[in-house]
Length: 299
Image (tube, rainbow, N blue to C red; front, side, top):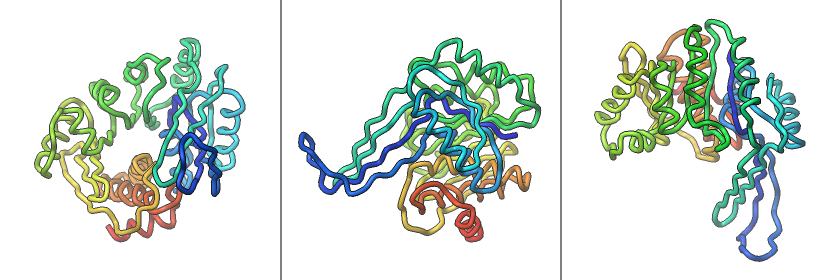
């Protein structure tokens, strides 16, 4: 079974406004509502590709119940832990300039964390667990390490899609996959990467620290994979019109898992990763299978 963990899920309320004027009353052209959270995105894309997973995490209040309802509508299984306060609503204004207001989210207590650990103890050998995204400031900053420590004696493939310290501190537990982008590599190593040789060098540095497979996403320039056998794969991005970059990185994670589970082959998993991330970038929301397969054939 594939599990995704989202500590701070949200509803994203997107408002489209012509020429917004701050400090005045504005009227929207239209509104859109999506559920958000990196782990949730991974689960939805997996479902679009025909693969079941289970969403873990925390929810609260009427917002949390709506998140679960929408997941149910997508056919995604969930096993969230209820907390007292409301889950987040993030406001995203699209106009002549884009403005976002991201909420903090509910408080997650130590008791809630212990409930999560009990759920994680039920994971079995060969399961996959995706730890994705940032964490609320009410949760210990070493939570990803604690989770990996508790699961270290099980043969579970752990995917970590996070930034800087959350990522670096996870590497000693030898995660199955990590997915930094070039900017994140620059931040981790305090450098300015300009060449492919530098990209490969710093990916290998992450591998020395424990990561088994490393995808470095390069946006419109594609991506490359350094696999656990030290084989390097590189791919240009498929051609298409950028519509939406939100969730493209999460889609890459989902595509890699899908390809690896289907073919047990790193090259094909990597190509599905690139195709799925691109399919989201070329769509109004998250990738659908038909477009993923079409893009895969071009790689």
